[in-house]
Length: 110
Image (cartoon, rainbow, N blue to C red; front, side, top):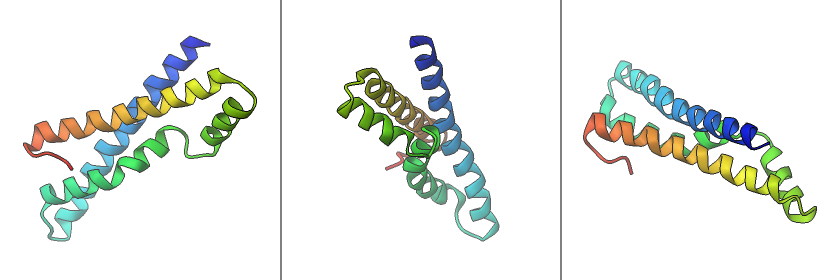
C-alpha cells in the first residue's frame, strides 16, 4: 500500500507542477498576442492557477472529500493520511513551479 501512496504523491506533484508551468506559459502567449506584457501576465496567471493545479492533481472529484469522511467517521486513518499526503505533494508541485518562475524571471510570485 505504501508504494502506491508514493507513486500517487509523485504523480500529483508533477501534475500540479505541469498545470502551473504549462498554463502560465501558454497563457502568457495569449497575453503577448493581445498586446499585454507577457511577464506581468505570467505572475498573474501563475497566481490564479495555484488552487486549480491542486484540484487537477487530486483528480478534481469528490474522492478527496469522501476519503476524508471515511477517515473521520469510519476510523480509516490511512485514507485520511493518504489524502493529506497527496494534497501536500500537490502543493509542493505548485510551489516548485512558482520557484522555477521566480528563478527565471527574477521576481517573486505573490
